[in-house]
Length: 339
Image (cartoon, rainbow, N blue to C red; front, side):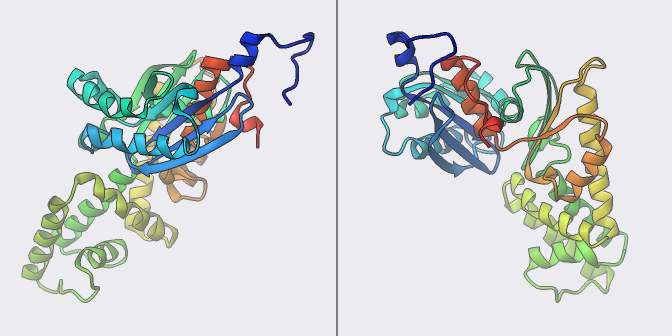
């Protein structure tokens, strides 16, 4: 039974109707899409998952299909028409500024037949709101891709990074994977020792650690094989090599440590570049690359230690909360208050 607001003797019919139904929040990133259905009391009614949904690395229709699949999972056993609001935080949302892409994207999602429009915003916005009720601050995502945003009055006012794999994504898993490839190509070209991180990369690419690099000709062949391997795949697939950087950084491999330090430098620069001098709001961190125990995450927190650092429980919670306050008002429980 819902508690009555202080000073009220009864709940009006309009208020009771406003408390019915549910809202949906979606975090659509480069690797995975997660959705939750939530009621006015902050109770999670359903969850759904699907593949990545970043239209900078996927056809926009595929991105929309993955979002739709995640929402359908969250709606399992429920009536879509009872959805009062739906917010999707999506990486690469700027691609929807193209009318053709936006139309194709919306056509897929209309098949869900929700009882409300779907509002699509930047995934960094929902990450920020998943960790705090504050309306001003900074959000940094570093997962498959990366982006840093400044938020004032819950609106994005400044962005650093977020250009996708072709234009940057500094410090992201993709960026780390690309740097492993680059440093390995350099090691082969400059006849450096092939050990540690470069050897681990070549082993994973070639499928064996028993490869020849004893001569210049052998090194040229390895270099060409590595380049050919990279161009056979979608560029974003380089993100899968990021865990090698973390593993070898933890083992004090100098090449891995150098890549980690460069990533931290770039991410720190982005955070500081979007924050106004008078901004005392929190910095919300989300993403596998900057997780608390990850080498990049550890060093980044050291660099930002003078700021108020918060951890996101997941962008889908922020998206659902933003959807909920549209319908139920600011009094709706925040995800961090329900833990």
